[in-house]
Length: 311
Image 1 (cartoon, helix red, strand yellow):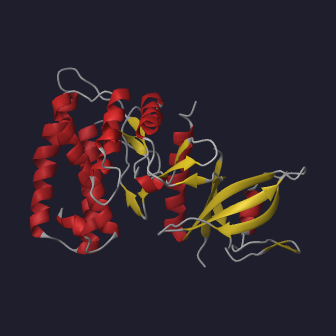
Image 2 (spheres, rainbow, N blue to C red):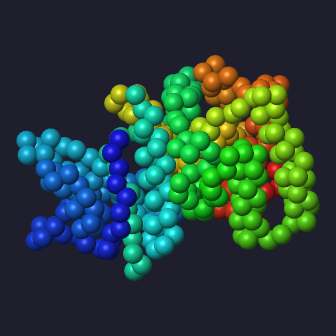
Image 3 (cartoon, rainbow, N blue to C red):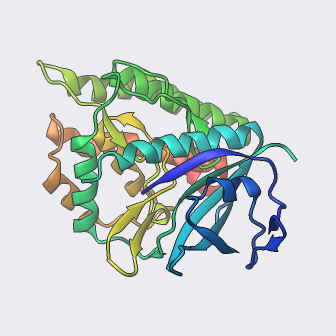
């Protein structure tokens, strides 16, 4: 998959020179300029549903009349720049494992997908392959740019210790939640205990007795809405990345939450067949519960007043 992320001067330009583009979406001149030069834009249609950005599909033609389609995402201002740079860099890293404020856009090949729940076996193989084959460029946990989970930034500063990285990540998400929903004494007490006692107890054990854990590239927001199956080939695609290098098991915490649908044990079972649980293996479920807290708090920060905060 090829992708581009760069600034667009406006989102209200409906023409290329003197020729109007068809469809329901006014295509920006900067997007047109980013398309391969041998392709002629034919139409642009609003496509998909994003709470934090605008999305569309673009139909182009080659000289022999063959249609080639693209997907484009827009987000505005400094926030949009950072958000789409984070997604672009994350998707760029993931692709390596495959065998009037200024407005920015993310452009990639269009794939006609269904958002039905993915096949557990196929997803497990693809995900475990990405985790096994990815290599942190620094050998540390983190990412080289700030990435966004939904519309909110997450702390991805490099750390050599997974315990320290996760603690900073979770504390940062907790602050985002408090900024939106206000301080809650009981929740803050539980978070303090989690950060001061539970996190070091469970995560330090991963590297005890000479054990080491590899920083693996994770998608970072792998719920069913960010996974699609190609209607023609049956291939799985993952998108809307919120990536960073992490303990591979971090990827699966989101599958525990009640507000998403991938709670079937089949997803975890199939994944563990392709990537064994880290030692101590008998604490896998405890770590999975711990990792799910990040998802719960991030969702709460996006949806003020949600019952998820009380879970």
